[in-house]
Length: 322
Image 1 (spheres, rainbow, N blue to C red):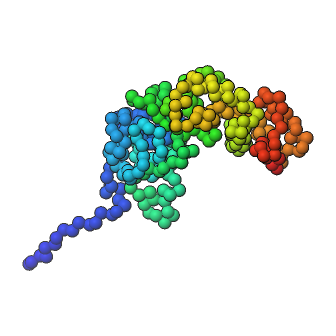
Image 2 (tube, helix red, strand yellow):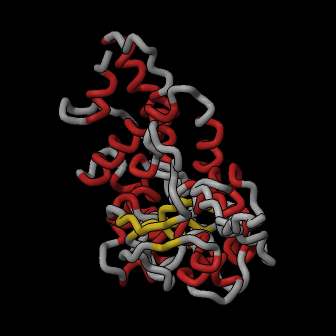
Image 3 (cartoon, helix red, strand yellow):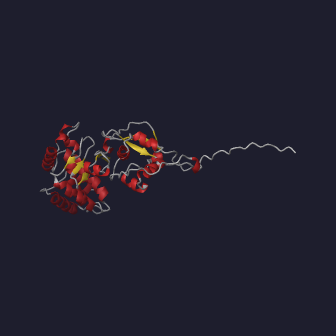
């Protein structure tokens, strides 16, 4: 009896089968801790430096495809941020030996942007691990981190870049360093300005108030206007700026005047005082009599004789808002 000869066939590999995908890299040898608020490009560059690798080579070794773009990984002021999709962020966290939620909290720009979020009908939400460079507007570029903190968390580098909170300079009270503008070639020594350290501690206390974030936005708008138009606190701010630039002569040789690049730092104590005072305004606003009392109290807090804002002053706008 003749038996039919059958040829074995190979079934196609399901596209989504987990066992068919390349294995993800395991945990790395070195653990490089992120700085609070660190730029993703800064952290990944420091991680690559621990292995003496260029950043593109590190990402390639992790199986993360890096699209070409205007990124800077040579220690210069970054003009673009590195964006990772969800699979790439997971691989980075695993290799860095840092739980992904912790890394997401430390790196504010690591979470994918709206253009990277999966479509509702997609079966492969984020696709293969990938990264790309996203250009940054000058106002959103990171600033230099405290060199002592970077050395403590790195292997041989003292340069890192962080995104400070809105309307706030980057301050390290432990090592008395600060940064206010990405154009500065080094962090600023603030030992000669103890009022900045006091303001930083005040910030932590005031931030507990539920209305503080909105109040800080108003306060920054107001003090910026006063600073630019030489109103109310000009002499105090000029004296503070002179002390800062004397201690940090490199601020006077950059592409922009320290009057501009140090503005947020110079006005920081008064911005915090103003923000904390603005939280006292009730939701329904202030009556005319209450406005006068409020301005008298604010003048006392700012340690000036009197405060009578003009109608074009944003402080006038705020106290008349209901």
